[in-house]
Image (cartoon, rainbow, N blue to C red):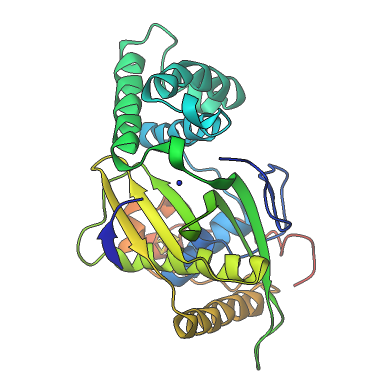
Length: 296
Ligand code: SF4
């Protein structure tokens, strides 16, 4: 991975479709695969039980900034200006608050002075975005698009591995095929890059499986501190990563029939919302609801 920085149309490729919200059977996404590797019980709580987790203002601000950038890329390239982005902020927040009561409840109402400050902080992130690239020159082929792929079963695996994720943006221009992901937090410090690399490899493999070619480049744009991380995947590395995902999915499917997803206390506990129902913290999990869809 190297430290660098970062690209109009919305014609998605055949395997990329607009993101949908209907409940789906479990598949591996970068987040859920990471959950399982950190703590199998956390994976169960999120992917199987789907226990609710409280929203934070930082999370909702990330959602809002992504929504603004999505709408920005629906504009003609020449209209993708910082001013246009700022003007999209209010309407995007109104839509988000209407669609997500839990997000709206983070503020007392439109007159909440905290809301104005929070919107200013979202505007600063958009300024950070324009410091990293000029969207007028970006050849985006998909924006906020669901990507689904199937990793063929390896020897000893329980079956093919369904992969699923949302691409913030896929570009296909003179510089090749490029996946771009926006981050509204700060660049990870030393020792935390592995999680970022895991996500980048996941998307590289998914694009390889759906498009028949690996992205030439994957780029993470950290809007808060104006940093970009670029990763150029290597075929051998992606093959090894595929075997890692295969092992993760095999372990999940083995645990699925009985719900034998064990707690793995560690760093993940610091941010886990489920300590009250976690045996490692003296709690009792809710009855296992069974693998979604019934088949394990
Ligand atoms: S509290 Fe820790 S051990 Fe328990 S589910 Fe959460 S991450 Fe896993």
